Amino acid sequence: MHTVIQMNSIEELDETILQSLKTLFKDKRVTVTISDSWDETEYLLSNETNKNHLLASLEQVKNGQFISFHSVEDLEKSFHDNQTK
Image: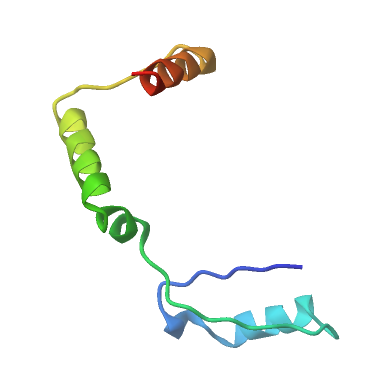
């Protein structure tokens, strides 16, 4: 079994979470790994190309420029057409 618990702060780790883990993994050998994680926005903005693309997309939304598709097939066709350019 694999369980991921994501928290905004280590302060959220409390006895309730520990008890839940003990119940889930009772009598099983486990490995506990704790690592810091990136906020999704922070991660996306860390790359200059992604950052520029996201900021341009936000400007389009602010200016009322939306892209809409009538079906998944239309979306896929648009995606594939753009990949061949």
